[in-house]
Image (tube, rainbow, N blue to C red; front, top):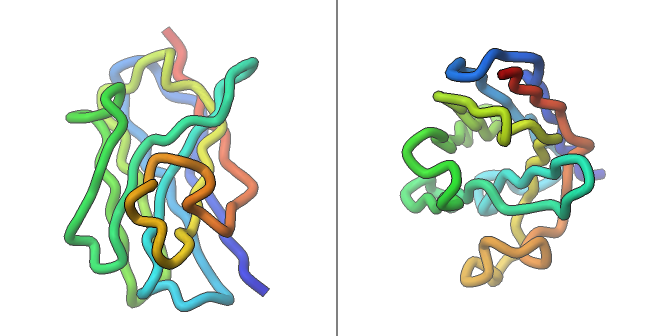
Length: 126
């Protein structure tokens, strides 16, 4: 079955950096767009970053643009989110998601993704 497994979360001070990773199995990873979403306590899950199946197209939420970088390694079935200049408001559970074929136009909505990981906690202290 399809599995997405995030890792790399943790506690970091404001201004610091962290990289979270997502390992995928059970799907044709190299043909799937991938994305990162996050959910802070008491808030709805929100889009963070998107990467096309080739890695040639990326999109970011305005709140993370210029600070976060999404990348992927199709040979290893992994997607990454490098987070720099972290802020306390970046504190959330971070989820990776695998895209549904044909839904790239709605890349910033949960509906565009058919598989989700269990999430990894990122906490930024002030």
